[in-house]
Amino acid sequence: MTGQADTRRYPGIGPAARLAFAFLYAPLAVVVAYSFNSGPIVSRWEGFSLVWYREVLERSDVRDAVWVSLRVAVAASAAGTALALLAALGIVAMVRRGSPLAVGFLSTPLLVPEIVTAVGTLSFFVLLDFERGMTTLVLAHTAFCIPFALLPIRARLAELDPAVFEAASDLGASGFRLFRRVTLPLLVPGIVSGALLAFIISLDDYLISAFVAGPTSTTLPIFLFGLIRRGASPLINAVSTLLLLVTVAVLTASYITGKWRKPK
Amino acid sequence: MRVGTRWLASPALGFIAFMVGGPMVVIVWYSLRTRGPGGVGVGDGLTVDAYERLVVTEDFAGNVGFDSTYLEVMWSSILLAAATMLVALAVGFPTAVWISNRPRHLQPLLVLAVTIPFWTSILVRTYAWIVILRETGPLASGFDAVGIDLPRMLNTRGATLVGMVYTFLPFMVLPIYAAAERFDHRIAEAGLDLGATPAVVLRKIVWPSVRPGVVAGCLLVFIPAIGAFLQPELLGGGRSLMIANLIQQQFGASRNWPFGSALAILLLVVVTVVLVVARRAAREARVVLS
Image: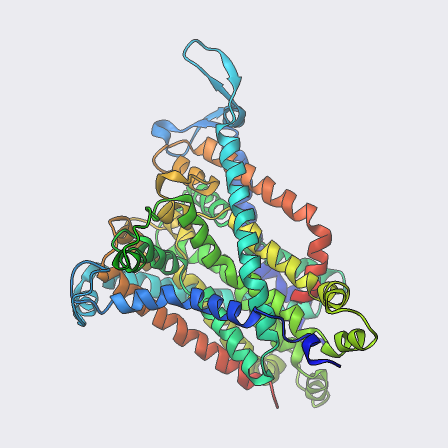
């Protein structure tokens, strides 16, 4: 075949893709860079300094918001992952037609527009007379953590060799013992990766949290939104950079558990 | 492979039914109620006022006439979502195809590189554009240094669009990549060897193979984009009131929960219609995503 007609090389695709990557990362780079600005105005560079990071550490309102967010994210991702794990095992045992229906139903938190979920959940809690606070935040977050945790757990379950379970049950394991000694250990990579994804999704949520949080349960995104409303400041850049760091760390951890689950 | 009974799924199914089903039923119920005392919550009466308000207006003299204000907000949200989808497709398609043509061992890393912004807080990503587009930002001062005076960028519809494309681009790239990565280039080579021109190969062999990925990507961008809140709120200023912002206002400053509920139902109906219309497309998409 002739070199000019290689289907892998379309003219212009390489430069376009590199531009797209620049488009994806330049804004994040700008945020990170200005977080080290010593001056009080975001985009007027006055020299390198860590002064805004010190401010982040010293401000009690930032600390409180981080603390609320962490507690909500840990509780919601744990609850969401536990429910997703049970659901994944239940879905495997379903008859043919049941499983896609169940998966579809568990994915509805991703399909409903977030603003609709937000106002609907608020109305629901008002109707039930639930006081808004940590509990309502965790309940609302758990709902959208389930589909995110379900994905890697189901993927892992699909990868496993059914013979392992047959062997285990032939050797006399059943019920809870089979689950604890065979199923659970084999599913660990999927569970970890699911829990990590659910954790970041919970940590980053703004809209639903803004509606269901109470006056004393301001999460970090709600706090950050309030700051942004008052105008850009290097303090926001510093908080954003730290949040970015957490996301990258958690994703890398999830990526590594994913790698470790693939080849064997 | 059975490692348990199907009843294990019931706690999750029950929880989702409670936390998604409950709110849906309540907003339908609330949309049919009178306004609450002081505008918070809802009153005791039953009325279809909220739905009437979607389409009609009453002036001081009591004349009732058709009012398209709110439907126009819905429409401009749909247009903005469509524009976001098209720009994301133009940027995302070459990117996805390029990644699928990289050496095998590099591909997972490039996919991770697309994924990191996707998982990054939308608030942080939207804020990044505030920093870039503001009057004293790096873009304006860069052009200023070479003597070009840029028009105002922040608080415009353009800024909203840029922020939306930025937010949703990974949704476009990932499914197209998944389809392109599975493409067997030997088939295209065979076509060329048998005398087809590159244009014909592209149209008749390459395109049908990646189309499900493109369809999936378009849906994954379009649907959440219709209900986008943060980008219009923070980048568009008052200039681009979208449906999500309008709904938020009814539950906030405007204090009209029944009307906000009716608007939420309108948005839900629009999204459902899009999904139903795209059902055939979605069926193709599922092949790629599963």
